[in-house]
Image 1: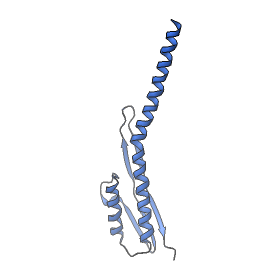
Image 2: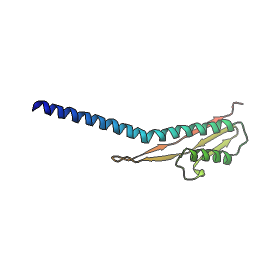
Image 3: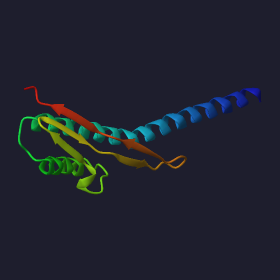
Image 4: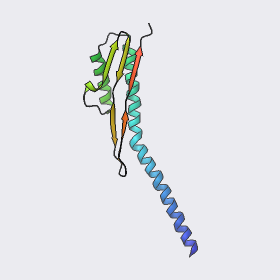
Length: 123
């Protein structure tokens, strides 16, 4: 009888471990794409600022380019005006903020992101 109690406990522990591992994979499945899109978007705005430090492209045109990239990456921005683009001489500053809601059964939460970049021409 004692041996069967130990077997039940081992089985219960194994189920708990598999449950925790499964929950971790599920959370990673939900969160990883959000962070990937953030890093892709951050890279895109840095590239936009870097390139346009040397061109006469207008702030509105830069905002439109960044807006299109945001739409492509499913960044939850409501309108292009949420993207701040400033040019001061050869310095370009691009920034925005957004929140992504992660809906998990036990404890839903929000992830807040604030991608930004500033680039100054070398000359």
